[in-house]
Length: 263
Image 1 (cartoon, helix red, strand yellow):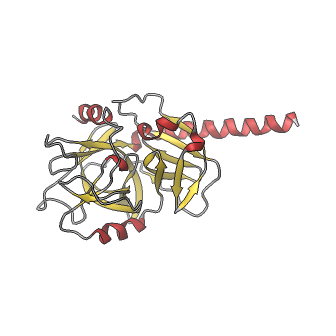
Image 2: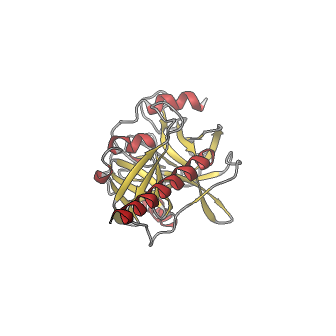
């Protein structure tokens, strides 16, 4: 069950950062080139991780990634479209605790992003069996090995199939060469919070936020053949996203009115 795997993975959420693991028989340049199609993918430098722009002022990521700086959002370093963006606040899903599936957080940017188009959130329920495009930044390595290449912080995109689907989460199984997609990629610790997309009529839609990798093979190398990349299922949390962003906007507007009246 994904529920059991999530608890195990999130308990190790502070593992050292690494990044996308690639097929041993594919050129790194192919993964780098593929990433240019997904500009809404966001790089977090402090804390290290990933995210995705879902509206001009909102980034969706994993709660366990940003929780350490939740009380001091100004210390966060968020890069969208190659530019650092100032953070105003962080909102963690109220049901999230380590080992729970509601591992989502919203990062509220101080100034709207005008030079990158936000990602569309998928509203369907048919993710099972579809091809997911996962976006990661940082160090890279090869599937079956620990990431070792120094971090260049460039985005890379890998492909895999949604093999397990639960109401609140899904998993991508790491496959051997005969079964794997041409550009199979696997998340590692430094990619947590990064997005998974599917394409509908050639348009990308956000379906997942990466939360960790299950070492199902038990060989001590997370990301080897037989292991699982695990994601929060974004479609299951659309209502919370809409409510949280609307409340923040209303609170901000009320504060602005109050400031005007006090002048």
